[in-house]
Length: 118
Length: 108
Image (tube, rainbow over all chains, first blue to last red):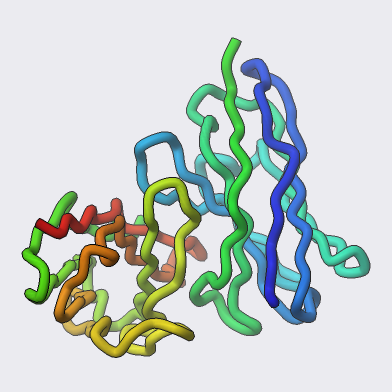
């Protein structure tokens, strides 16, 4: 079955860096757009970044600090997070997008928690 | 930037119909997607492209979209429907994904 498993979350000091990974299985990874979406404690969902085979988009709140990438040979999605701030504290979800077009997300991984605190 | 507005909470008795609104400027011109999120769990897609039910979603859950409001309707509400519901669109003018603030559905 289609599965997404995130890893790499943890506690990091403000200004620090962290790299999240998402391992995909059960589908042809290279055929799909992929995204990172986060949820701060007790808050709603916030889109972070989206990647197709050739195009990348970022939310304004992370542009210039976060970098999304994918390795189709390894069926993996990544999020390099630099210059982390307290407001980046959240559960980060990896989600599969559509096979074409910027549509819905299905499925989502279980999430990995990032805490930015001194 | 494009904004989606949802009521923070909706309450309904078992067996009744819940309607969760998602407001946005001319949202009827966009494709709206809905997610259900239960406590401690990841979101699950329930409706995509305004009206299409995701795999495994019961027929009593439906979506509509017109004018400035999209609506998720849950008929014959059950205790198991209690969750947060989030609407989402793609805003082509900014090349951004936009989520509503989420609505907590409480089954009385």
